[in-house]
Amino acid sequence: MIIVGVDGSRTGLEAAAWAATEAALRRTSLVIAHAVSKWVAEDTPSGHYAEVGRWMREGAMTVLAAAEDRVRREHPEVDVATELLPGDPRTTLIDASESAELLVVGSRGIGGVRGLLVGSVAHGVAAHARTNVVLIRDVPRPARREVVAGVDGSPGGLRALDFALAEAELHGSRVHAVQAWAWPHPSGFEPADPDGEQDALRALQELVADGRAHHPGIDVVAEVIHGHPIEVLKEAATRADLLVVGSRGHGQLTGMIMGSISQALLHHAPGPLAIVRP
Image (cartoon, rainbow, N blue to C red):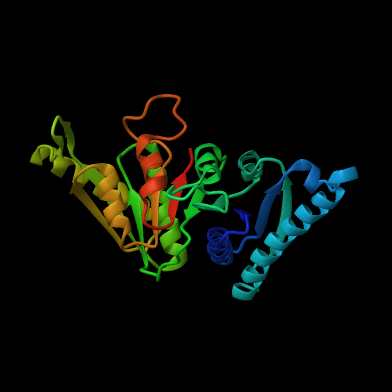
C-alpha cells in the first residue's frame, strides 16, 4: 500500500498523481489521506461550533474528492481509497506510514510560508516516517528516464542504491550512481587525492555490480564527482526524474534521525526526492 497526503494545494495534487503512477507500476493499492482536527474528523461538534465543524468537514471531503478524481482519471486501474485522519497531519501521517511501503507528500502545502522550499509537514514526515518517503515539487517535469542515487558506502547509501535500481526497473529508466569526492578545507571543499578517488570509484563500481545482480538489465552509470555532496547531488538531479538518498550516511552523529545531506536536499533538490529509511 502507498499513502499520499493531500491538503488541497497544487503540490498535494501532484503528489497524488505521482503516487498513483507508482501504485499502478507496483500493482498495489493507494490511500489518499487528509488530516483535520479530531473533533472535525469525528463529526461531533455541537452548539456554536456545529456549523463550523460541518463546513470544515465538507471542505476536507472536497480535498479528498479532488485528489481521488484526478487519480481515477489518470489511473483507473488503481485500487484507491480516501481516509480522513484525525489530528495533526505530521503525527497522523507518521503513524499511518507504519503500514505502508511508501509515503508520498508535497514539498509545500497550503500552509507553507512564502519563500520556504519545504513545509513543516514534509519536513516532519521525512524525518520521522516509518517507511520510505517521497517529496514532490508542485511543478511536474517531463520524464527523463533517469534515477540518481547518492551513494557513499554507508548502509543508507546502499539502501538508496537498491531503491533507485528498483525504481528504474519499474519505470524503464537508467540509474546514475553518484558519489561526491572532496575533503573539507578552510577555503571550502577541495578535491581529495587522485589515488583515493580511484579507490572510491572502484568501490562504487563493485556496489553497483552487486546491486545489478538483483536487477539485471538495468543500465547503470557509476560516477565519482569532485565537490560538496549537496551541490554534486543537486546538479546531478537536474537531469533526473528522481533523486534517492539515505536518511543518514557516513559522518552523521549517532542518534540523528536525518543527516545533514538529506536535510539540505529537502530544501534544494530540484525535483522529486526519495528518502530511504533504515
